[in-house]
Length: 282
Image (cartoon, rainbow, N blue to C red; front, side, top):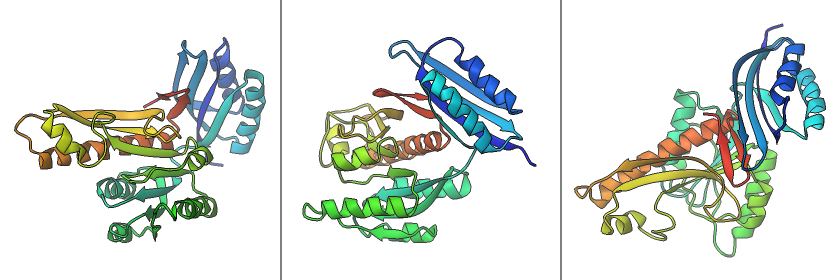
């Protein structure tokens, strides 16, 4: 039997003996730890841990032993195969830079997602999905059709066994109901000008104000618009010589990088939610 390479991510109230107990369970099943990170948050009293382990034991056996330990420590945990691609729906509107970047990285750089569908409220990006061989679903959204469109999305999530939804510049606000239903499994990307420059043409607004830093934020989606737990952020400097078009180009580049990192870390079980924050074992 070939060795399984598993990843264990967990959180629980902090107390002495957690690392010893987890390591003990893994050792009892012939586990060789290949990577381990942990963090205790004094502000919330929670402990977080991510472990990669090679073992000859069946995954179900390790999971059963961890379940018994979880009961003792009031622990939430997830056990998965290292590198297993997560079944993912990517949602977009008209801007294709994030969509094309994710599909390129998935194909050429082993981004651990399995894109089972691209869903868009406009038909413009169908050629990108077709180039990468991913089914494209045009689901228009208006005030009158929003409920039906979200019902269609949930149907696809269920029918396709989707684990992750990525809003790759999807320019629609998800309802509170949908955010609750998919909590912890939807990642959004937006420019860093919020809340200062809202609405149309934010880069033009920023240019008019002489902004010197542009950037992007990737976060989990919650009912609080653009205020979910942040996974990753990055910035880039601009100067008075950069026009609006150059700022947009640089902003899109930052958005691509930030979203790709957030998606990778989520798919690799490196992100654990800590209240309104995240713990990221990057």
